[in-house]
Amino acid sequence: MSINQNLLRTTRTCEDEAQTIQVAKELSELLEPGDVIALNGNLGAGKTRFVRAVAVAAGVEDSAISSPTYMIVQSYFARLEIHHFDLYRIEQEEELYESGCEEFLEAEGVCLIEWASRFPDFLPHDHLEIEIDITGENSRQLTITAFGPKHARLIRKLAQPL
Ligand SMILES: Nc1ncnc2c1ncn2[C@@H]1O[C@H](COP(=O)(O)OP(=O)(O)OP(=O)(O)O)[C@@H](O)[C@H]1O
Ligand SMILES: [Mg+2]
Image (cartoon, rainbow, N blue to C red):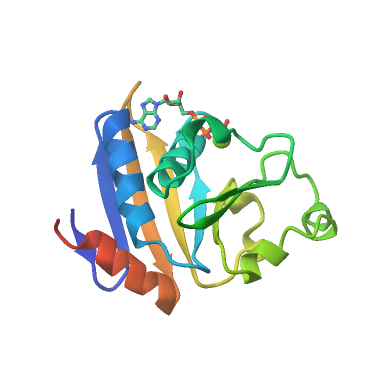
């Protein structure tokens, strides 16, 4: 892995699903209360798969996890308090605020937000973005970018060789 010190961006090439899960596990081990992770990428890129792997690595039962398609946010409680958002079906930004779900962003949990790019103003400035690009049937390119000092510290730890 390489990290560009100026851009605070790092990329990971995942040749198969197991490698994506490994990146998610490494991230999960570094997450702290208040972290906000935006997950972007096309339908079927692997955003939900990534969140599941983060949650399982934090001690959540795999069977307890599903995509929050019909709810804006689902919460899981284990070593970390995890709030899993999916903004795909939200049409108006007001729906987000009316649901009250932005309170999770200020709470002690970790927020992982699928389709965050649909509502950029919803995100706090300090966050980590993971863009997942489909490069083949089972291969993905992850582009991870830090915004703000808290997540800059996080990406530096993530970029350190194991
Ligand atoms: N390297 C990989 N990383 C992640 N997922 C992979 C990989 N290879 C194959 N897959 C498969 O791709 C699919 C990703 O589906 P997933 O529901 O996570 O996508 P998504 O980005 O959440 O889509 P949506 O926008 O519909 O919510 C899963 O079926 C997963 O098994
Ligand atoms: Mg999904």
